Amino acid sequence: MKKCTQQGCPYTPERPDCIEGKADCPHLVEAVDDAKLGQTKVIGGGDSLRADIVAKTFHTGEKLSADEASTVLHENPTSVVLCVGATGSGKTTFLARIGELFREGAMSAWRFAGSLTLCGFERASWRATLVSGAIVPDTRRTDRWENDTFLHLCANAVEGGKWTSRHILISDLSGESFPDAVSSQDFCRSLCSLQRADTLVVFADSKQLVDTVQRHAETDNVIKFLQQVESSVPNARALRVQVVFSRWDYAISVDEHLVNERYCEEFERDLQTRFEGRFEQFDISRVAARPRVGEPTDDIIRQIFSRWMVPLKGHPIDPIGEISHARDFSAYLRP
Image 1 (cartoon, helix red, strand yellow):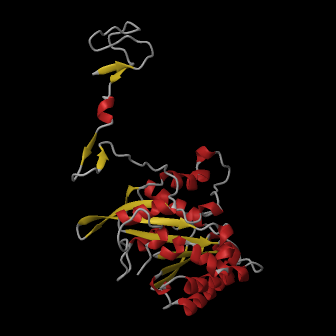
Image 2 (cartoon, helix red, strand yellow):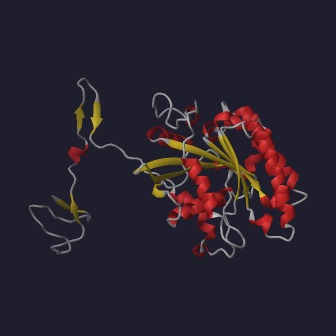
Image 3 (cartoon, helix red, strand yellow):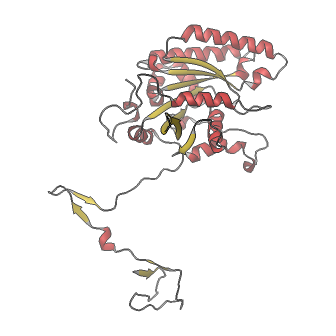
């Protein structure tokens, strides 16, 4: 049964008189029986009622809140990754490059299978596109209010001849908040993304490491933050920790690159001496996600992402306990 959406039109199925005199008027639509919309039916006896029409929530495509991320956690086996580092250390650029690799179909064995936060990924890459009008490729910085918000990805891979889907939630701590994380255990304990993380990625900015004035502050902050993690995260030994020497093109594109690389190697050895064996896994990588010259280190970025997607042995990533939408994100702690 059809009705006309134009006000004042006398059309009825019994008397098809169109106000515009058209036989195929575009304003004619299928009518909905309002009586049926209000119908309810009894389930299980008693007074318990349920509406026939169930509301469906659609995501905006922007980063997920902690509550929305919690829903993903209890609906799917999901890995949680937290990226931390000082302002300008390249965290968001690194995540933008992951989105770009999926868009290009170049994420090696992984295939894109969906995302609730496509707008969030697109926003991270926007200033590096021609259509943005930017003269030099850039990346917007993460604001403080974005702490404990999450990018979401679902990816497929072939395992044992079968396709397997994996979900991942990625949080990017604002660089402005990094000094608080370095200095305050209370701040670290308040970050539900840190308390629930399976993988912690700490970005050490190579531009700062090759600066003889700034390098000591950069190395001290990385070390102190990892020490804070040990003190403030229950069962921190279950964490997979990755230290990323980001913006590596700054270390190798100058005349003193051998001296710079030697200093970074010494810092790597110091980190391994201090922290190897104190976490479930501990490794160090060198990355240039959007170098000023040359090509991005895509192979290394793919390797890092693949590690994120592999559950640690004896470290289940399913929600723990009874499922409840009322539970907050940090309730899903690792065992």
